[in-house]
Length: 201
Image (tube, rainbow, N blue to C red; front, top):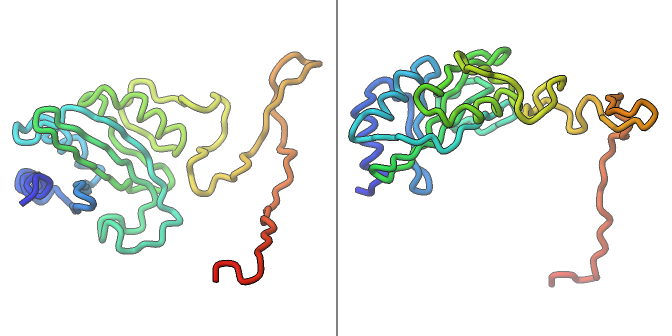
């Protein structure tokens, strides 16, 4: 039994029926949790001596709205659009773990903040809020971190237009940056390819 399989067995025993799903792929363990159980379970993942996931390495949002692989995450995903993914490290045991939690409301995706468990979540949660519109409940300072304060929309959502909604430029007459409707014409560019006769024979 590999170290990853031992970790999977240990997590299954510790979490019991709170564990929705777990998979090992490329020797990496991913577990799926319900969003309402996240705070209780992440405390266990951090505090249980056999696990000791003391470091949050990364946190990101995911938009599955156009994802067509129905086998992915099995029944755990259902038709839910958004998920938050946590990458954890146990410096004591040298274990790595990916935790995925699907959010129940596609219109207003919400999940508890894990700042009190791992303070490094602060800016990661702000980034997911800014780019995906995921609300982290009880975050102490949930505001945009990468886009302007007046920015409208969430640019990493699959339905956000590639060209955006507005463009900004410096206006020398007003001596300031201004926003204006997009002037770029949307078009599809197909490269012209010339191949020699019998190319690749």
